[in-house]
Amino acid sequence: MLEKFNLSGKTVLITGAAGILGKEHAEALLEVNSSLILTDIDQKKLLNLQDHLYKKYDSKKIHIFKMDVSDPDSVFEVSKKLDNSNIFVDILINNASIDAKFDNGNLPTGTRLENFSLKQWEEEISVGLTGCFLCCKVFGTKMAKSNKNGVIINIASDLSVISPDQRLYLDESLPEDEQKVKPITYSVIKSALVGMTKYLSTYWIDGNVRVNSLSPGGIFNNQDEEFVNRISKLIPLGRMAASDEYRSAIQFLCSDASSYLNGQNIVMDGGRSVW
Ligand SMILES: NC(=O)c1ccc[n+]([C@@H]2O[C@H](COP(=O)([O-])OP(=O)(O)OC[C@H]3O[C@@H](n4cnc5c(N)ncnc54)[C@H](O)[C@@H]3O)[C@@H](O)[C@H]2O)c1
Image 1 (cartoon, rainbow, N blue to C red):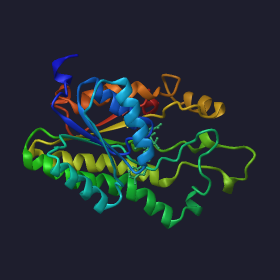
Image 2: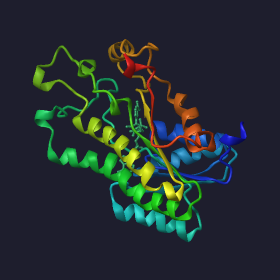
Image 3: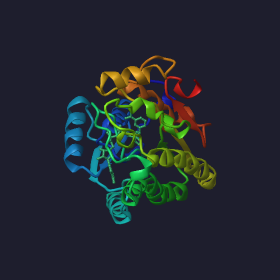
Image 4: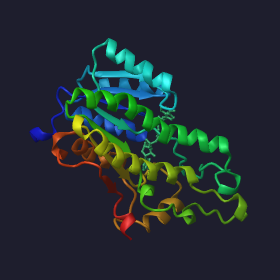
C-alpha cells in the first residue's frame, strides 16, 4: 500500500453502515488500517456485519452503535458516548439513505409524483438530507475545531447529475398511473448533497476539513434481468457496477492520497452520465 493511503491511527464513522455499500466502505477502510465506527438504525444487521468483519480481518478496532441519522438526539447520544470513550471521528462518511431499489420488481408502488405523500417526502428527506446535515453539524464541527485534517464524504449517486430514466422501470402490464418510478426525493436529496458538499468544503476550510461527494452508479444486486439489460444499454461500459468497485475510491477520498481534492463530486458511473 502507498503510504498516502494508510489510515492507521484514523477513525472513520460510517452512517447506514449495515447496507450493501456500507459493508464495502468498511472493508475498504480496514484494508488501509483504519479504525471504524459503524452506525445504522438496524442493530441486528450491524451485529452481523461486525461479526463478518471480525472473522475476515484481524482487527479489534470496530465499534458499532445504533444511530438514527434523522434524529438529533440519537446522533448527539453517539457523539457523547464517543467523547466519553475518548474516540475522535477523523473522517465521516454520510452513507445512510432510504433507497427505493428495483430488486426483482420490488420498486415500491405509490412513488409516482401524483401519489407521493408529504409523509413519505419528509421521511426520505429526513434520512438522506437532514441526516447528512445533522452528522456534519455534530462531527464536522468537532473536526474543524480540532484542526486535524478532517474529511467528510457524502455518498450521492449518478442521479445527483442526471435525471432517473423512468423507462427502466416500465412494466407493460400496468396502466400508466400504476407504473413504478424512482421517487422525486431521491433526485432532490442527491442533488442537494452535492450542494451541501460545496458549501461545507469552504465553510470549514480554516479548520482543514475537506469535503467531497462520491456519486456511484447502480450496483448489480441480482435485479430482474430485463432491468439489468435495460440499464446496461445506458452505460458506456455496458454493465452495472460490482459492489466492491467503489472501494478504491473510498480509500482515495478518505486518505491523504486526495489531499488536494476539495468540494468535488466524483461521479463513478461507468460513464452513464456522459452519454
Ligand atoms: N446501491 C446502489 O446501487 C447505489 C447507487 C448509487 C448510490 N447509492 C447510495 O449509496 C448509499 C448506500 O446505499 P446501499 O445500496 O448500501 O443502501 P442500503 O439500503 O443497502 O443501505 C442503507 C442503510 O441505511 C440504513 N438506514 C436507513 N434509515 C436510516 C436512518 N434513519 N439512520 C441510519 N441508518 C439508516 C439502513 O438500515 C441500511 O442499512 C445510499 O446513500 C445510496 O443512495 C447506492
